[in-house]
Length: 137
Ligand code: CTP
Image (cartoon, rainbow, N blue to C red; front, side, top):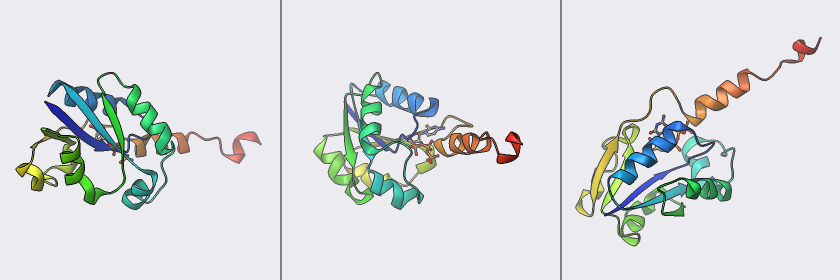
């Protein structure tokens, strides 16, 4: 069984590792579409901290990931599912219901997100912990 999933996976954190591990358990081969920098900008309105090449390299280094590719457009999901012969599409439940249109070509499984962590929240914590100019006075 081929499992496919998609995401930005910027500044990889435990939520990313957990969803990839759980996705892998659903089949034998795990294929990950890593959102391109341009796609990420259009989705989230900011550039990722790590470039698409770095994120491809990082995600490909995770245990259980068999193949990575660059996801260039949200509209190409059907094409990617067919191209990589995916039997199962896994998405975090923040996307619940949003990909049901592909149930004619594969099984769709939404997995619960790991609570209390996201790339955005890590960026906020790092920003807040930056010393302010007054700290040096
Ligand atoms: N994910 C998860 N648990 C989290 C964060 C993300 O299971 N706590 C999953 C998402 O549901 C998605 C995949 O990891 O299937 C990639 O998510 P991504 O959007 O790259 O990560 P976020 O941390 O949610 O990033 P951001 O804060 O930029 O939205």
